[in-house]
Amino acid sequence: MIRAVRFEQSPERLKIVLPIKRNWPLLIIYTILACAWFVMMIGGLAFVVSIAFSGESYAFVFVVMLLIGLFILFRFGRFLFRQWATYLSNREILFVNREELIVRRPVSIWGNTDVYDMQYVTPFYLSEKPAALAFDYGYRHVYVGEALQPEARKSLRQFLNATYFPNSAGDEDEDG
Image 1 (cartoon, rainbow, N blue to C red):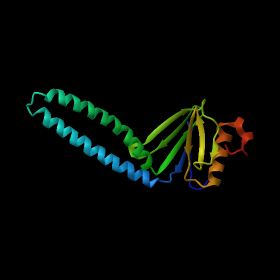
Image 2: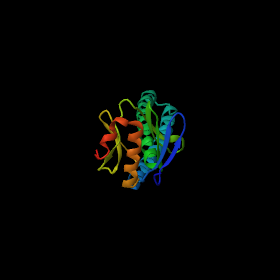
Image 3: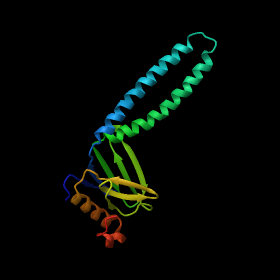
Image 4: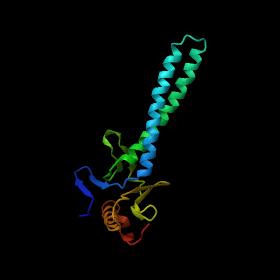
């Protein structure tokens, strides 16, 4: 059907596998940040242990302050690794059925999954910047298929809109 796109149909949903064009500068930056985060967590935990067993009078208060700082660093790490996994992924998968649209950017078990209620998803349109297939979910613009050729994006848009948004079939010639 469409080059570089793989379709798998099941009774519950349609699975569409799309390639992703890696953003190498951001992947390198997030990799460096992830390594720095890891070193800071290990160093912070070692410092907490050394302070806790130092026997100083201020040890308890200082350890509590350090643990609060490490907790904040841990929470930042969750965000950091989610971003890193997004830029590390080599494909994105759309799961579409009548009730929900799922966008998954897999990297083994660390993949990011976003679920959208089809009731609030707009028909797909072609975005110019970035050059991608897009849909709106409330105020949020969601872009998929940036690595696809323009003809493939247009064909995929027509297929998805005809299948899941039949009322928008008359708007096929508009590009967003």
